[in-house]
Length: 162
Image (cartoon, rainbow, N blue to C red; front, top):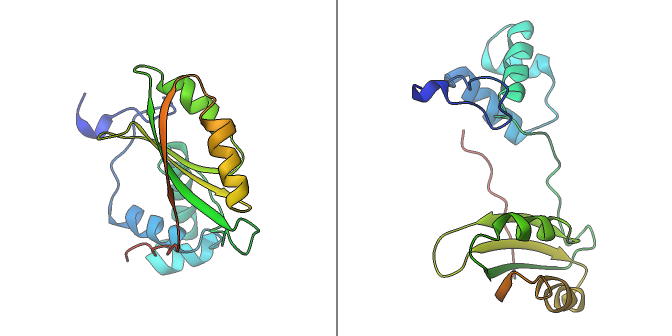
């Protein structure tokens, strides 16, 4: 199967290659996920019907996975953030991922290579809640062999290039 005919993650149909207009639309929506079809069409110099069709195709192909708000965690009452590294039992990724997804405050989970197996970003109310999350919830997952917690002192969201 040629590269441009790779099947999308949802398995619906082949993922089509992105052109410059598609990439412009993606950059615009990353900056402002609430942009109207009209403003997208105007900014990338295509018709509204074309913009609508392209955005729907990007959604159908799984390129756009959804729309969300960027939240200031501290202002939202989540004063403590941490990256937690985990070493897990070999071949237990799916089980561990399911357990981590159920955790309150889990924001990002990644299977990685290197000195540890999983990188988890969490947001909690305070350090006491973070401690409880790590010591009672994460370390009680049978497949978790060890953890290391890296406190986040300050965060900066990067704006999409464009």
